[in-house]
Image (cartoon, rainbow, N blue to C red):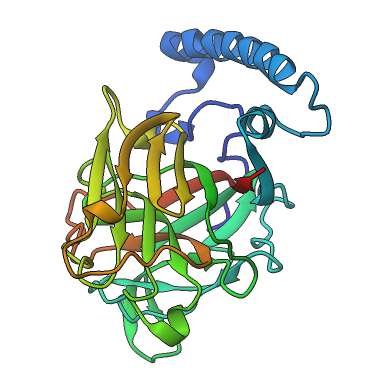
Length: 316
């Protein structure tokens, strides 16, 4: 299941499998145009990087420099620049094993195998496979995937949490980038709190959800908002998903555009705002479940969730 060379570089075009088109890019006039556009875009990006990094030469990327200028300081990151085919950095991530359904009747079994989560060409690849797999529970599952978390490795109270991600699409596919309170094991869910920075229902390829789950507003009734692309699908390119979390507010962004702000005034009467302690980071690609429904005959496998980077900042 190892697919080296399919994943784009951090400034390259969107992921695509050339073999599925039946011809090479050089034979396609549309791709020739896109290649010219990408070269022009790269030149513009280079100019912006130089401009943004002026006076901040110790910052390795334009994003870090620009964010630093706006009052945020990088505290944790993973650029996924490990060797092609290598597992995610175990000093930063814990790969879950299990197939309990996550409380959402999901169908996948999460593994720590490189077939399901690995680094390739500067990105994290989470790959969901349709295969018969019996895990530690002895139950045979029809899908495998990966869920990574920083629990026990990194957590932070407040800050800017961001990831550049290209999501998959298809009925029953459910990618997510989210935060969970680090008292999860003692307080339980939803008392620990949950911040969903990005969830996508694969049958709605142009829409993502940003949500807060807490006691009295969780499950099917969270504080939630949606963002829809003006055109195209989220699966066609990388997009930047961000929350800026402060003591009395959580702000949600897509590609620099703020589309929602949630505050204690938004929670139901008699409930608690539980976003005042450290949270850890999670990335996963689920199959089926209460939110997206199950796959059908139109759903293609394997499915891929590509993560260019995850970065966390705190206020200066």
